[in-house]
Length: 123
Image (cartoon, rainbow, N blue to C red; front, side, top):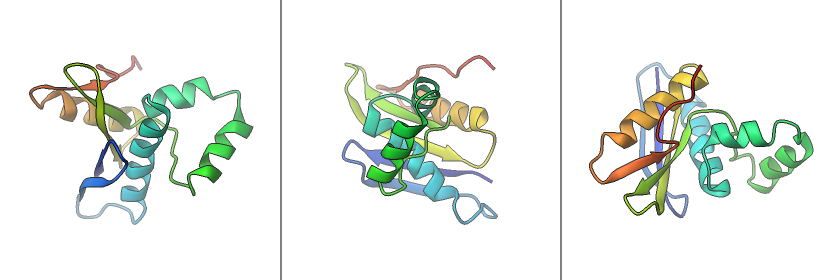
């Protein structure tokens, strides 16, 4: 079962949804993925990939965010047509790659909005 959290550009909840049977931490994980994207201005996958060899910095980011920073795929930025980020969406409940695909597909289904990244990574 999936959980989805949409944050505005200031990191405030806009939508929080979870399917029946989702784990207790799923919304927190989804929020952390979206929050990580907003905090760093890139998808949670990009954060994971860029900071893979910098565990001390990743730990510092987690500490600075009070544990609200989840750098694994499933968090994507929501951008207007002019490229300005207006929020982020995080998804949790399946594999991280599938979470990311759900997030990207959902954002790209809304006219006038796009996701960063625009397409899921190749598996």
